[in-house]
Length: 151
View 1: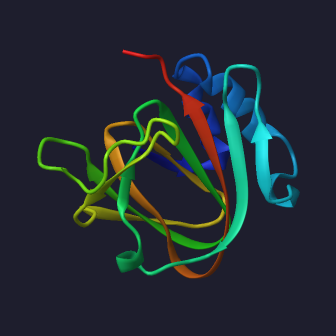
View 2: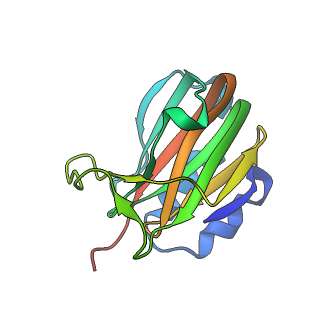
């Protein structure tokens, strides 16, 4: 898991291939003016979803993990807390892995909470369980899905 400010987005440049496409998308001016929806970013399967959603309480969500994608979650407006826990042998699956959606949900509570302010991003890799959209009022964010190499 990585947490940082968008002004330091370049720390992701050391990550492999498709992260270049994600960086190019996130470097564009006017991110906060993009309409809600899905955006393709480059030719390597990177895509971004812009949304404005009502926040939820921590007890309303479940921890999730992805096997084939990394998430770059960027907060553009509102206040969001994202729960985190390691995906290890003690993690108890709540559902089977859905390969089409590349998601699996897990029982349990986060070990720690990240409290994002607008202009910050968090990166979650397959070893990171996460529970997003926790807060109050409206959360305006971008989630960039970055395909990872098989293996």
